[in-house]
Structures are given as structure tokens and as C-alpha cells.
Length: 182
Length: 182
Length: 238
Image (cartoon, rainbow over all chains, first blue to last red; front, side, top):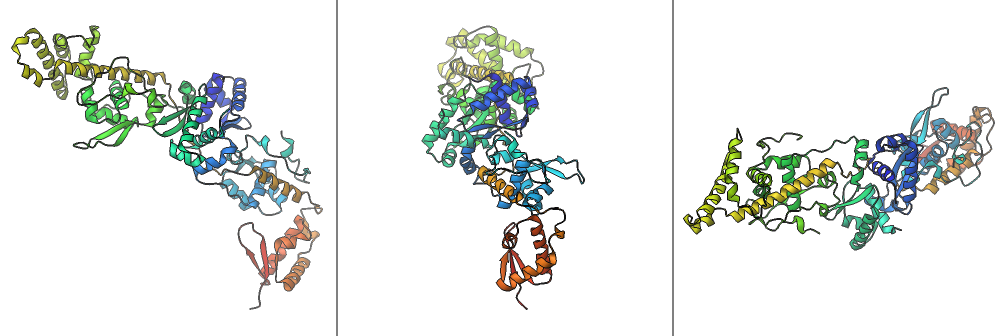
């Protein structure tokens, strides 16, 4: 049996049109952030074996559909809406695993100009700007979005699968972040 | 443990931006309407004690929040409480329990002109036109809307509160439908 | 009450003749099923008289009911004076009672609905939130594979000083090499040209060499779609 607080949080997340922060949840349900954490944990557990999932990006939370029902959801919404070229997928992978990343970093890794792929991914809302790096030229930093998590059926970035080969440190690019999560 | 079909139906209803018909559900989840009925019944039961409810208007289905958490959801959405005058509530009660109903029927019961209350209820989208009666003058038929179910926290018309007073049958108006519902 | 109720006028809290009659029944704690409606005629008339500024279109309705009540009262007092067929023409007490009963039910339901509304316990549906419909159905393993691929690409032996590839590779030399390749094979892909030494500097020099060859009309460049492999073709002599 779920707690009333978990149900209140569920109601709010259900109607929310964008991710809701832990602090905002606490405010609207009239609980402490710590209580909200417990409610979220409770919800997350109870969604096991259902068609819904609780996803989060840091402290921002959102209800999403379970990835295993993507085909049915796509059938309802009108066909498979994902068409990402291999080139875009590479750029996306770099941004996803190293975020936040600058265009120069992505290009240094892929070895090609990535203007177009970054633009395409931005348009499809798979990546977004995340401020600027405090470095010469103040380059724009990119990170993945909520839509990215939804698209790939991930509850959080922690669920990104690890690279299939041991990851080396790329000279001049600093420590990779992807596999140090979890 | 829920069936995969119930979860598939749940996923589709979750992403749907409007009520989904039983037939459409059957199509997108690749099941028979009868199987969808079972899945819907299963979901409806499993939402007991949660922050969600399965609502339906005839064969159209929609996920909504549980009425008991309305205050939290309203706090999040910044929603105003709906106010309806006693006169409009009477007209609404007649339409809700007798639908579809014509203006003449509403006026016959209330004993006053109901032009304005019908107009107000239409404006608030609590009632809507439902075609015309095949009778002299082809009067407009009115019925309640999804908005009505939501605003009154009803999962379906079956949940309309019952009257305690035994209902009289008015000559010429036919059988009342309200209290003969299940 | 929110919003205009327009021409509909609520008189002193009464929504109509039936409303007033029902109010009297309830005030006097009478049972609709057993009360002689005609007995309410005096009280009804007194209340109507007390209402000031009756709107014209409502007056007739109030008075019609009042006259009916007076008729019912008169009939109960002097039953012999009223011929039976005339009684059938007017609305009988039973009919009025049925209407009142029906109205009482409606009012009870309206009150119940009003209570529900006031409790604020309502449902909310989901607006959807993503009008443009973001892409879905991404293959997370494909993403991981892409990552693995770029990692492999990035961890290949790199030339020293990525900043100045020109010092290690000569564009002129590379141009001559490529010119020789297309002279012999007619066409070659960019990927093939890179395969001999897959480093970033090599790719840059090769690309610049290609641009130079294109500028000099030695080659044609073809790319079937964005990010597809570039096909390098020897230009036929005009």
C-alpha cells in the first residue's frame, strides 16, 4: 500500500508538462525534500512491472512510459519517430557520455566538423545548451535532454550502458565522465 | 502482477493527449476489444490507492489524477477552482442525469427559462451539443463533457451521486435515467 | 457566482415558481408526497406579494402557479362545485406533485454536485507537454556502440601536436598522391584515402588536398547524402 505522499507526488508528476524539481515537489505536496525522496523511492519501486517509469535527471523528476512499450506508444503516436543518422548518433554518444561537452571536443573526437549534427540533435531536442565553459572563447557546452532519456528509454544518465571496450583517457580532453558514473 | 497488455494500454493512455477509444486502443496494442476491456478493468483495479484513476465516457478512456490529490495538483498547476451558480448547477444536474436532454426538457423540469444557464455551461465546457433529436423542430440535444467528469472528480457517469428522494416520472418526459444506472 | 448570468434573474433567492413552492414545503417540513398542495396557496401568495420588483417575464410563471394552487385549494374546499371534465383540463394535483418531486430530486442532485465542486476534489488529465513530439524508440545499444566506435577512433595513435598537423603532413605531397590514385583507379572513397593512416591530421591534410584538386578541376566530389562517404572521381577531360 502506497503512502498518501507518494500518491500526491504521482498526481503532480502525472500532470506536469516538464520535469519537476525535488524542491518544487516538496513545495506543492507540503512535505520536506527528504520526505519527497522517500515518496519518489516508493513510487519508483511500485512502477516495476507497470507501463510507467519514474525518470530523473539530477534532482528533476518526470513520469515516462516504460521502454518496453515504446512500440505501442509509437503505434499510437504515429509510427517510429526516431531517425538518427549514424553520424548524429556518434555526436550524440559523445555528448551523452562526456556531458557537458563543447563542439570543439566533439569534433576533436570524431575528427569531422559536427556543426550539422549538433544542429540536428538540438532541433530534435536530444541535446541542449548547458551554459558556457569558462575558457578562451567561452564555448557553448552541450548536454542531453529529457527527450533524450525518453527516446532511449533511460530513467537517468546512470543507466547509459558502458562502452564495450575499456575506455582510455583522450589526450587533451580531460577525464571522460561516462563510465565513472553509477 | 499486471499483464503486459494492461501495461501497454497504460503506456498509450499516458502519452495520449485526449481520450482514446476502446477500438483505437485495441488497434495500437494489437489486441481484441474484448482483451482491451479486460486490460482496462485490470488497470482500473490496480489504480485503487494510487494517485491515478482510469476514467471513461462511454467507450473513450483517459488517465486522470485521483480527486483526493486535487489540492496538490492545483497547487502545482496554479489552477483556479471552478464556480458554478446554483441555477446553473440545477440545469447541469438535469443534463447530467438525463442526457442527452433538450433545452425544453430542462425548462419543463426547472419551470424557468434556461437559455442563459445552458449558455454558461456550454461556455465552461461542462456540457456540449450532442446532435439533434429526430422530433418536430429537431431540438438540440445536450450532454456532459470530459471536462464535467474531471471537474466533479468522477471516473465515469456511473459515479454521479444518487439522490435520496424517490424520483417521480413526469408525463411526457419519459423514464428518468439517473437512478436506474448501475 | 462567477461570470454573467445575463437575462436570467434570480428573484430573492428563488429560481422560479417551483423553487418557491419547494422552499415552502421544506420550510414547513412537509412531505411532498402527502401534503395538499392547495393548502400552500395562501403562503405562496404571501411570499409572491413580498417579492418586490418581479421581472415581467417571470411574473406570469409565478402567478400561473399561484392560480393553480388557489384552484387546488378551492377544489378541496368545494369539491362539488367543480365539474370533473374541467379538472382534467387543468393540471391535476398529482401532476403538479410529480413535477415538484422531480424538481426536488434535481435540486438535491444539484446540491450534491455543488458540494463535490466545493470540495475541490477533481481530476486532472495530462496535457501531454511535448507538442512537437520528441523522437522515441532510440536504441540504447546502438548509442553505446557509437560511443565505443568514437572511443576507438579517439584512442588511435595520435600524432604529436594535434594543433599543427601541417608540420607533419604536406598538403602538396598528399595532393600528388591522390592525383596518382584517381589517375589509376578513376574513383576512390574518402574513407579509403583515410585508411592508410587514420589520424585526425592525416584526415585534415587529405581533405585540404581534395579541395585543392577539386578547385583545379582534377576531380569531382560526390556525396549521396549528409555524412555519407565522399566519392572522389577523376574528372573526364572536356
